Length: 138
Image 1 (tube, rainbow, N blue to C red):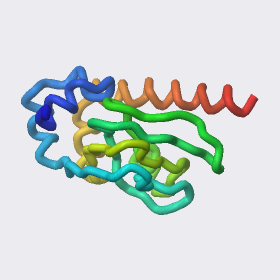
Image 2: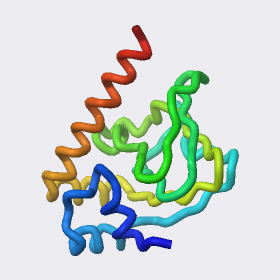
Image 3: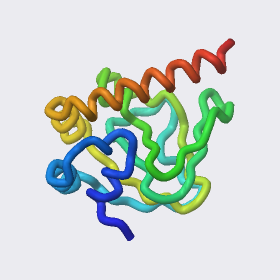
């Protein structure tokens, strides 16, 4: 099993950061495993944790409609960390056993603010998600 810093480095969000910086961030990560069928987050409910899928697959629904799936290297929970609303915009359910790397709002924000490459990658990913959501609503 890859160590946490290596898993972070393998994602689009953190790939531009140094091993040293990711090693520091890894100390703030909570490594959890969820059984198939477990809700990792529920739409409309409180949530203040950024979650990166390390292993496994999860389904994403919005208003009960399937809108996608997440696998290794993909994440959710970034919007609540950024705007502070802490209300989940989607439900994420584990399809298989899921290993998730989780960061609290203070840990994620501190890292992102001091690492512009990660912040830029996050902006690019958010824009892509916004465009996909707009396409679904057309």
